[in-house]
Length: 212
Picture 1 (tube, helix red, strand yellow):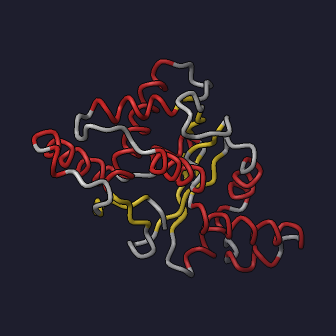
Picture 2 (cartoon, one colour):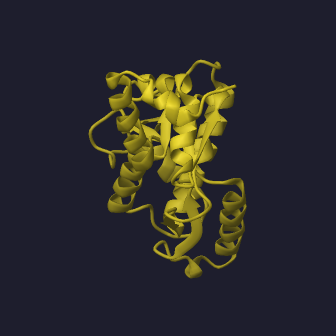
């Protein structure tokens, strides 16, 4: 008979318990743990080693732990509370990065990493024709900070508003915006294409970052 998770936890070494606690805090703070990110690679493998203990512990807070095995991503979800509400512009930018990621992924070898530039995001945003101005520097900077916080991307250069600023995009981007929310963003984009003046970037999008 398989032992309960809390019994298995008690059998961990002191060092493993300390690492376990640190990773739990990381999951609660950033939602995603990515195998391809140097800073979280060892965390990913510890979760994999003690997955049942992590699942049991998180279930106490009504959180579920998921593994996107092919992409090397662990992430947590809840039934709805504590999700991060995005404004409309953030939802659109998240969708843009997701689309760029998928497009570039098809062009690259399986093991290659996806790197984009801030200019790529701006170009896709302008192509939507929903506003006669680019993304503001402040909005772009805040959005990139959001992606970094949740382990969706990593800056490879210092100035995010520089058009040549490079972003390494992690596979976790695929799980940041649920499929049903992607459809809603698409529907709104179609409406804004018909009536650009109706676009308000600060409007609540009713979409959430796929955060616990």
